[in-house]
Image (spheres, rainbow, N blue to C red):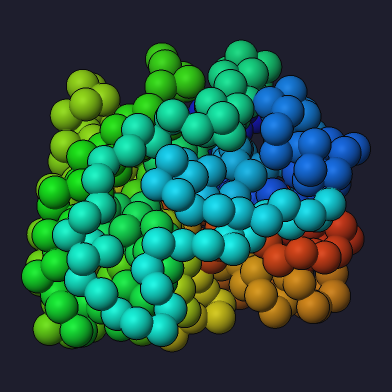
Length: 357
């Protein structure tokens, strides 16, 4: 088989067909930052540097998919979320919910804010346009975001939202339906716009349905809201685009999500090795229905292991998935700061050795 581009490889995988080799997917703002040649203080406000870092990333580490980002909070800043930017990091310093005195009025008084009203939101979107124009015919793009419940948690603070969901669920879910549902649809649809006819997938994050984060008594309601948000985004896109997923936690509830979302999804991407959902179980249960992306432990083997251990990890994953499902080699989430370059290059070598069809 002739060698495919990363974009061709990824789309072939999503369609359940056999590409020339297993697609490779991982991403890291930290490494893209390093490849841009500037500090985070400049990177976060320079769309050309953001684009340069991400283009160099896919070219150096041979990933078939590009994820353009700087942090989780740029779209939340119009709500009043504040971030602290150092030479190497961006992290939140002020969310909306009080950390010591729970108050339902914080949710009841929440008002819609345009996700692209802030300076940094438009900077990231411009960076996406640059990347699309530069490498959009060569690699696929993984773009989207979290659902409305997760986005509310980012605005209010994850710990605070989990606390308040138990104390006054009506106020929390009211804010989701009244504000964050429309906000999420506008945010994700707006984030997809730079790819235009190069759009390869809608990526949906399922952090709110991780077993450690979703209170059991509210799972049904969370799933209903997440599915409504996803379907509204699909309507806004206006054409049939594959839906990929992101389960970043160590306890992904794949059984519940596949039951509730069914054929809305085209792919299950999750963290294994490292999570409590074995790849063997996922392949056995879902391999005939969904493409599956897993196989890279980004927290231990890739971050702390040796190239030989990376090689063994990839071989093990391929031994499980080969010829049993449409499979992509993927990290569970964003790579940790300080992930060794040698391990990333070992991923490419192992993928080419064990994942070529």
